[in-house]
Amino acid sequence: MSATMKAAFLQELGHLEVRETSRPEPGPGEALLRVRACGICGSDLRSVRYGHHALKLPHILGHEIAGIIAALGKGVKDLHLGQRVALTPPVTCGQCSACLNGHPNRCPNLLAIGENLPGGFAEYVIAPARSIVGGFLLPVPDEVSDDAATLAEPLSCVINGQELLNLGMGDTVVVLGLGPVGCMHVALARHRGASKIIASDVSPERLQ
Image (cartoon, rainbow, N blue to C red):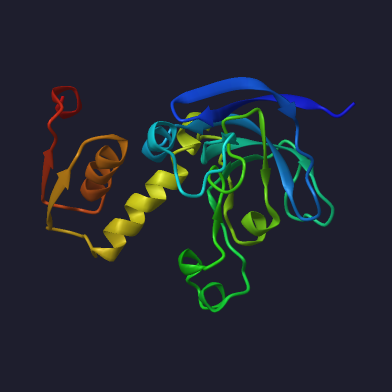
């Protein structure tokens, strides 16, 4: 009998159901992660409420994943069982001109964990081979908690945005919206030396 696990399936719009399903097994070049924490992104909430063009229901959502390596497929190197890692969503082809020229975000064959592929709202999730060789499976230092490690993906978006803006010493920054990502923008702008940071939201709780 194959091993099972519990997972939260989006059965239909507005309806998540936790049920038993087969536990995946890692193929060549893949890793199986035991999920320790998975963030709930705003895109997950939108998918539950309104759907997403990449989703085929029922589906396991969740792409802000922290866990430990539970099994390794044939040929995987530089990883070990029990290692703490964060898994970020992109799964690129590694062969198109965009990937080969250092622009994997433009990969026409791009897939995403939690959208096209099963996500982290489960006890176990597969890290595809391309996630591993593409650098999307990140070691987590001992001093970083599992909950904090789930923020690697949204924080990377914040860092990317501020690097594109070339934000630095003495700048004035306006942040519109103080959800988790907005708060990260405030903190990073302060860290990068912004002299004035203006934060705006319509929610009294978030302003506080």
